[in-house]
Amino acid sequence: MIGASSSLIRLMRAGYILAREGVFSIIEPPAELPLVPRLGLSALRLIERRGISTRNKGERMSAALNRLGPSYVKMGQFLATRPDLVGPELAEALSSLQDRVPAFGMQEAKVAIKEALGKPVEDLFDSFSEPVAAASIAQVHKASYVDKAGIKQDVAIKVLRPRIAERFKADLAGFYLAARLIEAVHVPSRRLRPVAVVDTLARSIELEMDFRLEAAAMSEMAEYCRNDEDFRVPDVHWDKSTKSVMTMEWIDGIKLNDMEALKASGHDLSKLGTTVIQSFLRHALRQGFFHADMHPGNLFLDPQGRLVAVDFGIMGRIGPNEQRFLAEILYGFISRDYRRVSQVHFDAGYVPSHQDVDTFAQALRSIGEPIHGRESAEISMAGLLSQLFEFTELFGMATRTELILLQKTMVVVEGVARMMDGGLNLWNTSEPVVKTWMEANLGPTAKVKEMASGLATLGTLSAGLPEMARRAQSLSESFDQMGRNGMRLDAETVAAIGRAEARESRSGRAALWVIALALSAIAIHLWS
Image 1: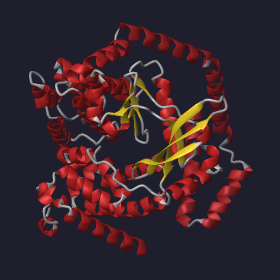
Image 2: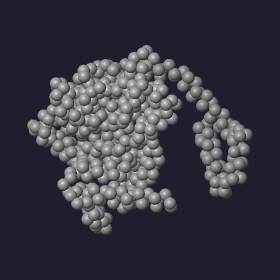
Image 3: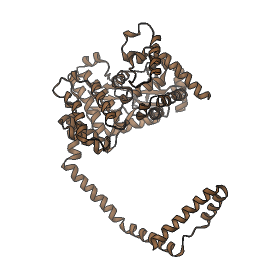
Image 4: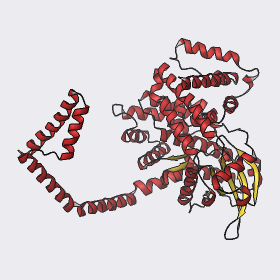
């Protein structure tokens, strides 16, 4: 009871801050929302701060969530990946949300590093700077040290915020309460499973606060991209990394949100925009593993003109079926084969089988055709997503969180690429990567590989046939003997039944013996 009351008080405080920052004025209530909640939203708009109407949606959301603290910032960033829940317009506003959390003190950072690495900062590093970046979960310091080979290493040290786990735990209790209330009050929202959404957020935060997993993600991505000429990942310094502290290579480069510096660098920014999109697609299609937080602050241009990604706390994974789904969808839109796109949805089980393939293809055509024959600057990805999510409800499609994360990342990536080149078109830029994947995985070469794999599997199965036959014969003999002599229970089983009889009610004992007699009947039937 105390826990629920505390969560309710936290939610009331959050509602007040959201109202003061004018957030409820940018949220359109659902048409089916009952009268009382609708009146409540109208009342909340009356307590907005003066002058708030001059701010855009992104500014209002950012101000409110940063006032509420790290947990709410993470919730906002997470909801930016779920336009099916909050709507494409609000998701777009949230996608620009950046952490503006004050840095914690140098002394606290040094204590945290000593506890994590077992030695004082002065013994581990020759230099250690003030925080160079601070976010909701951690902050970053620049440092240097001389390695065993005598080489100076410039590194970035990511330090987990003190007591952040306890803060998130308390706020998540409030999120769960809000999700349950939403499901209770707004029946249509149950299709989107708000409680499950909070489950996903809680799990995401739990993983993100373990820097060993982020370091592993960086290492895995580096392995996949070792032969890429236009993209790379910083090296992890494993001997100076733990659950709460991660040390990685320092990147000397230009952040992609510093347009003045990028223009002054002399690099081809149009080519850089193409690299942003094609790198993301290569990762998603080639290994099904992609950086899911590719905003400009997490991307650098190094002196060699390569794209460098940092902050691997949020990663996306898709399996072979989803990789094929993505490639087929993109190729279908590029080639304007909407029936093929529709059929792929049905084959993957994303659209219920009782729906009509051609009708769904017609809906997809209404999304795809506006893309072609128009200037890229006129194409609104938010508008396209809005239509798509309208169709998910219209055609009874279940929410697929892994595809939504992929889709959200595509929108962010396109936005970053267009910062580099305002005339860049997502579909034209995607085509070479998609065609290469299609040829490698669905063309004649892929068929030969698939046939070879099938033969290898058949060979393995053939090698195991004698053992399978021996086991089948042994099983048949056991059933034969059971049919002639009856089913014999060993001493341990008899004792277990006895204990169960002593412990359970009469109906429980009857059920136990019914199961035993049923097994005997099956054995006799098989023997006869």
